[in-house]
Length: 91
Image (tube, rainbow, N blue to C red; front, side, top):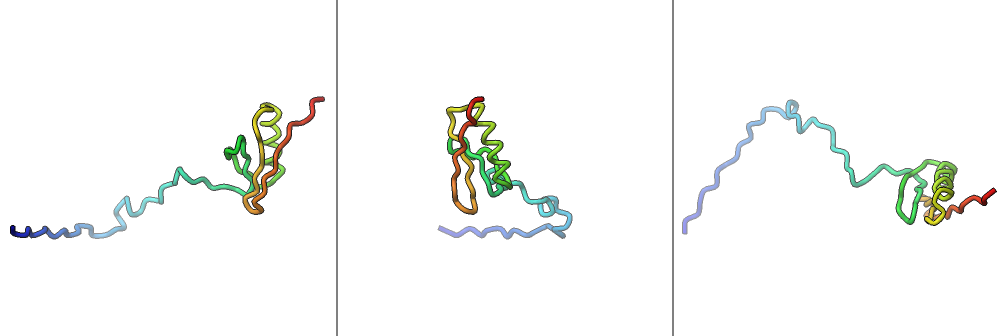
């Protein structure tokens, strides 16, 4: 059996400066979000991230007071600690 000669592929690009694919900004990855230090977790699923513990606790208390049955916690990604949020006592 005879071998076939493969055709040579030559590039017709003159410059990559005019190529829209080469100059396009990198695509945003939808799988990975930019996350802050404190993560608000509801039933062990991260819902939102915050820069300060106070903001995360305030948002967690709002969720816990509205839905007392769910488990709400704030995870610190730097210290690797998890703080459970309790519902406020009824007045």
